[in-house]
Length: 336
Ligand code: TYM
Image (spheres, rainbow, N blue to C red):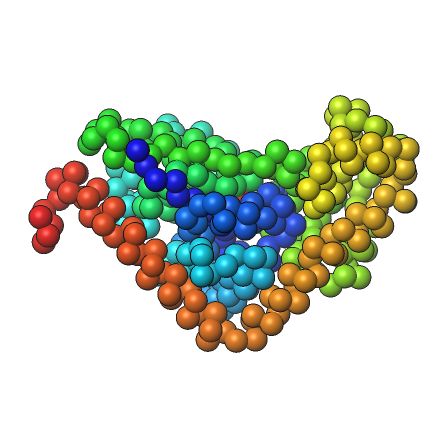
C-alpha cells in the first residue's frame, strides 16, 4: 500500500566513526540502487545537548562531505540538513500530542544521555524520539537503515504511527521497518568491549574516525584492548571475549564476510599477527574516504548548495504529507 522509501539520519556532533560507517552508512550507500533514499543530517537533534554554533556549522559540513565521500550519490539520493525542512519540527509537535509520557520514559538513550542529573536535561532531549518519528514519517518512509542502538526509537516510531492511525484513519502512516546489518549492528569501543563506539566517548583512542590519518589508525588498532588467547575457529567461542569479538566483527564487515568465515581463516592467530591485518583493512576503506572528504570540503559553497537543493526536494515530499496530516486532525487550512 505504501511505496518503498528509505529514510535515515545522522547527528552532526563530531566526526563520523567506524561504527557509524559499518553500522549505518555503508548500508545507506548499498540501498541507493534499489530504493528511493532520503538521508538527513539531523542538526535539530544535535542541539538537544548544548552545541557551540561554530562547531555545529563545521560538523554539519564535515558530515555532509563524509557521506558524499562514503558513496552517497546526491543525484540519486536526497541529502540535506534537517533544520532547512521545517516540516520535521512541525510534525514532531503533532506527535508530541500522540506519544505518551510512559512511552518516552522507557527510552534507554535518554536515560544514558541525561545521566544522573536528569532535572537538568533539556525538554528536547526527552522529546528526541518524537522528532525522530517525525523525520521518518514526514516522508512515509517504509525502511530505516540504522545500527542496533536505534532499534528502540524505531519501535516508538511504529507505536506513534499506530496510535495516529487508530485516531485518524487506519492506514495513514506506514509502520517503518528497521534494516539492521547483523555483523556490524553494534561496533564497540576499542578500549572497552562492553560499551559502543561513540562520538561522545572522551578518549579518542576508543574509536576510529573517518578522517584519521593512516598512522593513527594503525596505532589505535595496535593499542586496542584484547586478550592473550589465540583466535578460535568459531564465533560461539568468543562469547566471553567481547573485545576479540569486536575486532573480528569489524574485519568481517569490512571484507563482507561472515564472522565464522573470518575465524576459519585466522584460527590460531594471536592478536600481534591479526591486528596489523585488520589495520590494513581499515586503512584500505577509510583512506579514500578521508581524501575525498578533504577534497569536497575545499568547496564549502558547493557543499552548502547541495544541502539547500536536497532540502527543497525533501520539503516537496514532506509538505503535502504534513498538510494531509493537519487536515485529518481538523485544523483549518488555506487549501481545503
Ligand atoms: P547517530 O548520529 O548516533 O548515529 C548514526 C548511525 O550510526 C549508527 N551507529 C552505530 N552502529 C554500529 N555501531 C556503533 N558503535 C554505532 N554508533 C552509531 C546509529 O545506529 C545510526 O544508525 N537518533 C539517530 C539519528 C536519527 C535518525 C532519525 C536515524 C535522527 N532521526 C531517523 C534514523 C531515522 C542517532 O542519534 O544516530
